[in-house]
Image (cartoon, rainbow, N blue to C red; front, top):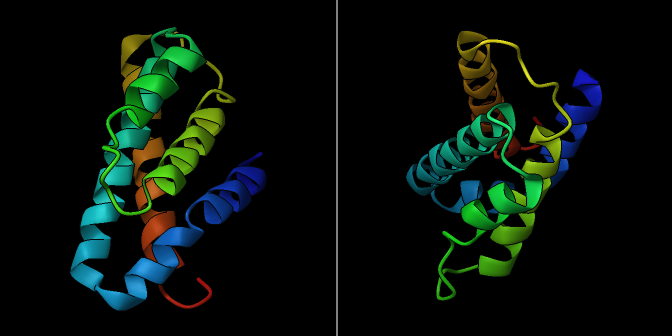
Length: 118
């Protein structure tokens, strides 16, 4: 399952690779933003929020005038799908750790996507 998740994350984050090569500081910002969105999605999953509601909340935060808005929304929907494949943890501390791990894995995958094959 971890390998599958890594592959899906890599595919979802391919647009970051193109941006990363042009402007590394902007890429760090984009990766941190994606990480925050991933955290929100996993937190919603762990708290029992319906997938459609969580995905709509996160994708709705992307303004129409943002460059690559439709691609960004599609990427966020993919992240939501990945988050919702995770098992729901039993206690609050474990739910928080699951959200933190997902955030960290998305940030790492995003940053590695800009390193030319990483």
